[in-house]
Length: 173
Image (tube, rainbow, N blue to C red; front, side, top):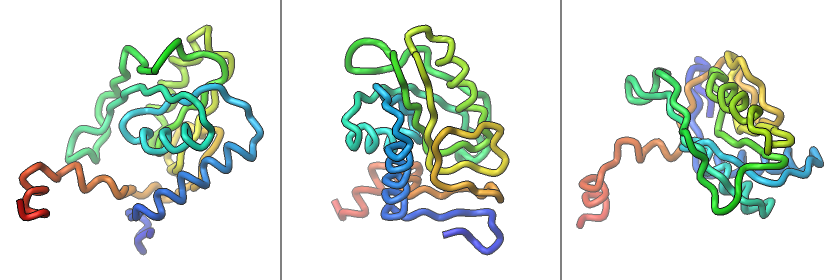
């Protein structure tokens, strides 16, 4: 649900899962035969996992981090993991890069540039749920374009502040 001022988008678990499924359909309808999925942790892990299951393709993970200040609301220095985690082999062939959103576009652009420098990757496409209007990078596949570039409140963010003592209170343990 987008607030009246267009500055905040609140997404429920049900909406979130439907958006991931719509993303899977966009990729499927493109007819592009990819070999592997690389998701960006942490935001791309849930969409990457679902797409990996739906398409029955291996899932690789690359950790990235840029949101640190002000409880994760201000973008800081971009850190890209040196290594990509995958069950076997190397990232190669046609690779679908998956994240949750193209915010400023800096992370996706940096990862795409790094991956395009890997000779084993024959073709690379990117897929996200949301693209903000301020993004400098437009992925090949996306579900929603958000011209007002709202702050997206995703359903799993409750765990950013929930600690074990809070869980114990929740379950009265």
